[in-house]
Amino acid sequence: MIFRIEDVSGVDPKLRTYNVESFEFPMIDKSQIDKYIAVKIREEVNGASGRSLLSYSKSLATCLLKYNRFTDNELHICRIGGLQDYMDYILYVSAKNKRESMRYSIQDRINSGPLFHNNGKIHLLSFVIDISDNALLDAYLRDYTGGGRKVYASPEKDNEVIVMNPPNDIVINQYMDSVYILYALQMRFGFLNSINIRNALIDEIRNMERFRFEYCPNERLAFIDLICYLYTNWEYEFEISRKIIDHSKKEDHISFHYNPILQFYNILEDLFQESYNLGSYNENVLSDLFWKYCKRYLEYYIC
Image 1 (cartoon, rainbow, N blue to C red):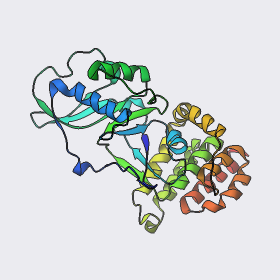
Image 2: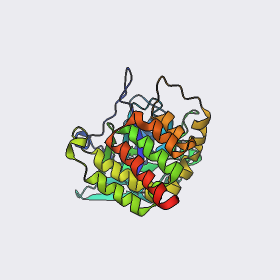
Image 3: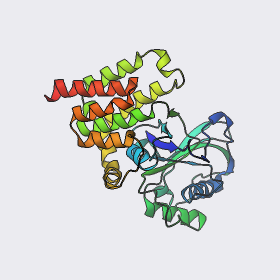
Image 4: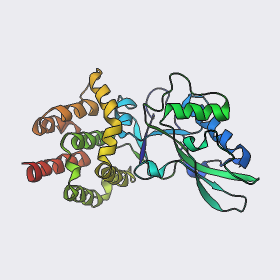
């Protein structure tokens, strides 16, 4: 899974499109595929006004703590799998009208020969490419576009993945505050490490009344996916997110009210009961469930 914060608030939000049905698939000559992809990646990385790709992160914490400082935007989850093995590919329709995929990594493409060994055109449907190594990215961009990333652009810091026409993108908006509670409780107490706790929590979410997700029907599935991700890949997530979490702790978080980020820090620093008492401001069915199962974990497996 990879993650992205979409700016849906503010005075002039820059909304991007995720509608697969309205996406115009480019037809590209096979000999130009490297240049086309490289130019599009460079536009996205350098913040060009007409960019058409989307930047995701392999780090959930980066999205929550760096790109959602006021906790008023939505989280997009691209369900491509767990770790890097599910990245670095292009999906296209060949001249024979056959849907095909091919490995495509910037490391493999530096100073390489043609990607295709025959002529013709393809319809490019989508791609997911890991660009989280600045040195490799610069070498790749210079190879195919003649220029690199701008000095301020550092995909490496954000563990960045570039996506065209994201597959299986789901959104968390209405219950966004609960994501912070889930992540912080896992980080502080590791309650999802218990398969019994995890399974019971998922079952309860699956069986919640339909009206709980009346205006956000996909969020039920999104949270189940998120819980499975944190259970399966917690060591990986924590390792790649540790720097952003440490940096965020040192920054002054300015807020006029007690918000999910302040609650996030309180959970990391306080005893369970203290942070639980403060958490009553953020009551909703999902947050309540996370507190409930974390408490159950501490009672049955720790005490």
